[in-house]
Length: 266
Ligand SMILES: [Ca+2]
Image 1 (tube, rainbow, N blue to C red):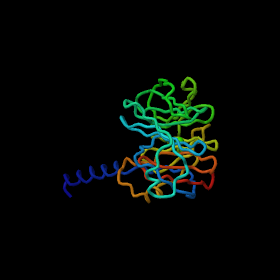
Image 2 (tube, helix red, strand yellow; image 1 turned 45 degrees about the vertical axis):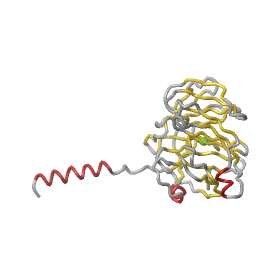
Image 3 (spheres, helix red, strand yellow; image 1 turned 45 degrees about the horizontal axis):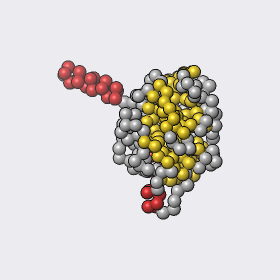
């Protein structure tokens, strides 16, 4: 082998090594059972999802297209009626905002915006806009633990906010094994834990809110694969705890389906 070929081979090997993903750290797997499926409007670019009573509340992103909607968990029977079912309520978000995470706290809906540094607050019953509060940083996911709002910003940190002032009261670093876990996206507080989507990842992680450690993970790849999605932006995003059914609804951006899953251990 001449020197040129040898150098080329070494460069290629280094290049290939750099392309190979680092071995993914894994938390303890949590198994689940699919209890039900329902239609999800594929026009919704899901950024926030929650259940209250017998309704979903969902925020849909993108500039000029952002929406806040509610619709019943129960579906009509016919296939056409399912697809064409109107929202119970719908609120358009001003075009300059890119809607992100959504949380319910004291009968108010709190909606993050991606890079507009503005929290939008709506009345739950009417979806009427009430007021806005400024904050620093990006808005990705949002949930409530009953006392505080918890925000993700795409990093490995979660931020706890006072729900009245939206001032940051605590920052929690999230780790999987010894490594930081970034790209935390949609959130759900349920059963004493924070459940998080990870952008471009088919896992949902279970986070101990006291330590920030990931203590378990769900692999949703099999459910996503059965949808045969053809756009890489159609990522898993959307977790809502259904108190009545003691199970999680999960979906993704522009997915045609929502799944109700019950965990083997939660
Ligand atoms: Ca949620």
